[in-house]
Length: 211
Ligand SMILES: Nc1nc2c(c(=O)[nH]1)N(C=O)[C@@H](CNc1ccc(C(=O)N[C@@H](CCC(=O)O)C(=O)O)cc1)CN2
Ligand SMILES: Nc1ncnc2c1ncn2[C@@H]1O[C@H](COP(=O)(O)OP(=O)(O)OP(=O)(O)O)[C@@H](O)[C@H]1O
Image (cartoon, rainbow, N blue to C red):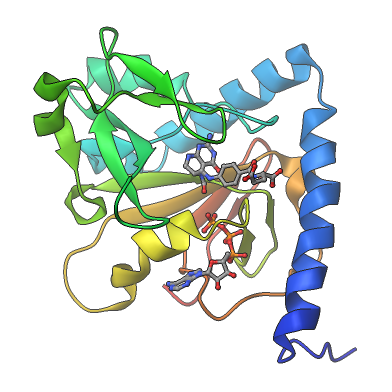
């Protein structure tokens, strides 16, 4: 039963293999399945107090079969809340900042080919927020389990950007989102994984105990 999770090499190999399997799984979903899952996810999210309360909300544009949380955009706008997207910071290695996203936001592609706001437009520089200024961030997950452990794309971007939430003080709520087919029995977890307040899929919700 016991997994030698203390061996970092073993842990990383395991996470890498799992990441490959789970990414294939979500990419295999049809367009119709994707649309249904996104709608179901957003219905669940709209029912959560931390989503209803939030004024500054980070989400992401789906990539690589990720569940689509963008149906939330219109709902947020109606409620007077603002949506933000992650951008890779050029100078701070592997950290994210968040840029206000609306219909007229100039966009570009980052080095992973993911669409993100183009921060070279001077007028938009003022619209950037550091992670700690958000009320809520939705984190796209590659995998999750019932204890609230998570697996991301492997860059550690969200882990590094939200590492400060382990300390006392005001912090954004963090909600991991994924397709239900990304659920696994038990994830080999890494000590640096930032604890999430909840994980929501199109079919279930996990509320980890540690928060
Ligand atoms: N939609 C979305 N946006 C996001 C993230 C995300 O997971 N989803 N991120 C969450 O962190 C950040 C980008 N992180 C990423 C990390 C790795 C790869 C990736 O595809 N890596 C390749 C190999 C790396 C390379 O080409 O250099 C791979 O694993 O195949 C993509 C995004 C910021 N924006
Ligand atoms: N707070 C941190 N400080 C320094 N390095 C970190 C931190 N968090 C993660 N890392 C590094 O980032 C790498 C990727 O981490 P991990 O495999 O947990 O990514 P992930 O959780 O899948 O990705 P993400 O956080 O982007 O969703 C690890 O090798 C780890 O060394």
